[in-house]
Image 1 (cartoon, one colour):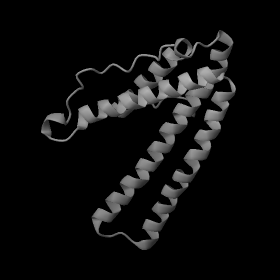
Image 2: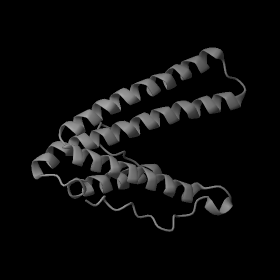
Image 3: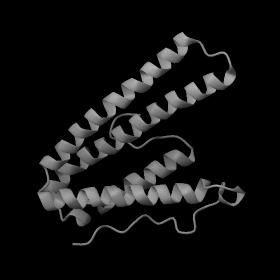
Image 4: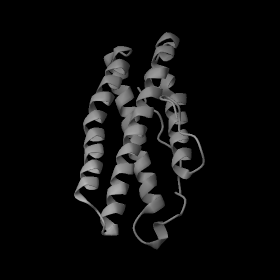
Length: 159
């Protein structure tokens, strides 16, 4: 997968990423009140920040899953655990810096009102994703594997 592109291949996680990416990108211009010129400049920057967030989250999750598997196996060695911890710490230190740089590039194309609207749009999408995840995999057998009752993403922020 190249930076700025949604994930490819089958699977619910990839489909969810594609849906979120499509929603954000399709509502970006109207939600933020962007001119056509701003939209053209902002589009690759937003794709990049979404891709970076996803990549860092996936790298972190892979390291944690491998640590969990290794520890559960009962054959964990200090050297292998140290290696995995180093990978995890690398991701955890690189992510904030890279995302801050990407957000600074986005902010440079927007006025303060648009910056605020972008943050609200992102927060609403993140909140809705968490709600959907809870509904799909929440505690108890009834929550596992069922589809959410209302799968729509939040509406764009209004002025």
